[in-house]
Image (cartoon, rainbow, N blue to C red; front, side, top):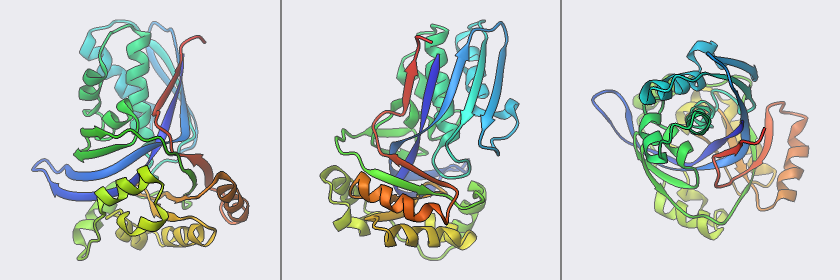
Length: 290
């Protein structure tokens, strides 16, 4: 079985509070994009994981794919094993949800592979134990996410946007970004309703002021290259450029694939961490016949 676990972008991100256990309460718009990691599942008597591709994903024993597999086995009592391999293509410490997407893919893929028969709702309940964004990746699609990320409203969307993603040479620590946010004195919140209307209608260019990520100003202070990347994308024709998640990746939205590809050609000489992709509805693609 081969799984393609897709990344995401945050169209908006607003922090509405903090729970007693330290988890942040959020209100944000997210959508999958076509950049993906590749997970292969093969029969095995034991449970193992091999990782290749982009560095910085941490020791295999702590990888979210392996943790998802163990959680599913514990929850269902299944005794089967699996030989898992993960090829990383989604940039790490980027705010694109690569680890959470991998965990969601492992839960959904192994649910089929082991024939454990759990519903998506049950998988989402398991997934939130691994990370707040995991339920989003189990469900997929454009979504408004509240709470710590587990309260999801999926929104039908027939429009898809060409994107260009840039990332600084180094990532950002999520913990460091949130600590800096709590020390900041000014916040510009997004207008989620207006931003959603613009996404659905194709009017992003005229409603760019509705889009905001409250973590972007502090992330820019921690990594000034983020501001330069956003400016470079805007100068090359992006109708919207902003940081996703807690960073450090920045995406630009273009009016057409041709405009996006022209910007890619212009920027490729100055950036080696650059990706072409597009928004989409699926967060996971599964091939069982391999």
